[in-house]
Image 1 (tube, rainbow, N blue to C red):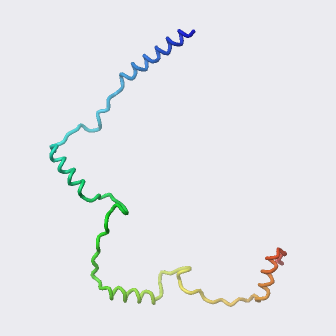
Image 2 (spheres, rainbow, N blue to C red):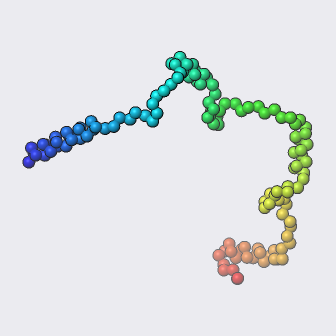
Image 3 (tube, helix red, strand yellow):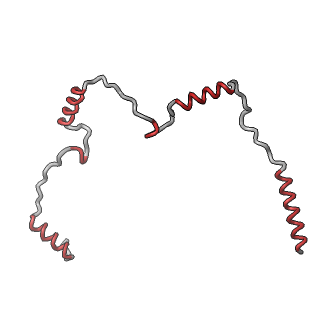
Length: 126
């Protein structure tokens, strides 16, 4: 029985080896065609290695470019002060300014009594 298992294992390994011998060879998507010589490619590589990375982001991008403004510092400051003192036409919600004061109709002592009762765990009248 051991000989038959050994013989079947050898037969399977021979079939696997024969199947692997007929595998296709990948030749690439396009055939290799280059008009540049080795020296030209080497020169282009040196230039690319010493130039800035056009795909860099954040800290790897290097120093930011200096933007030269056509407006004077005093004019920008005057515009900022005028904008800070004027109403914001686009404001809504919390940024729309000071909320109007609304007078309450509930007695202060009643609110305190309800707060004490809630703190003690007493049931509140509804």
